[in-house]
Length: 176
Image (tube, rainbow, N blue to C red; front, side, top):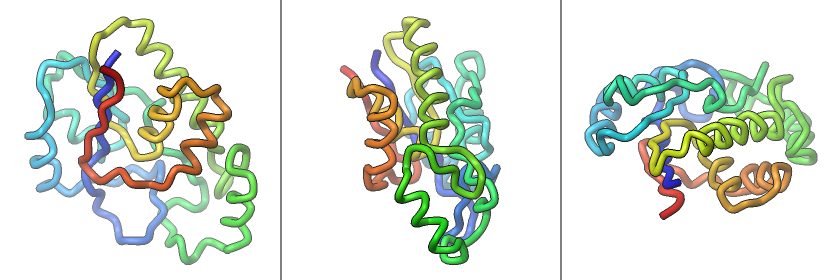
């Protein structure tokens, strides 16, 4: 199966904020620009968070499904806080245990990997030749790591350790 993974457009948040699972809107001009670049007629799945959902709604509604398993990581009490205001000891604790630590009391990377892997397994069972997925950088990194065939925990660590280089509105293609 060929997957076209699209990161949502730039969200309307101040730079340096941890916004993970927070339901923030995307820049409207960016929404229009990115939507114009997306292929039409493909089965499409989207995170239900506004910054993804607004983009997805610009596509064929008959082909569109929202799936909460595609949402970004929940950073709990860290959400909508400046990264600079999060105590260094908490960030270090996460860095020391990327797989199991729950930043801000939210989700661990392994929690997110489990739900993303379950989504991927369900999608594979549906047997589509190609699918468009509108989601978040963390979700894309997990889907890419899972696509390599790594076991779940190894894929989660790979995704967590991979430097973030996925631009807003950028598309990554997995498969043939």
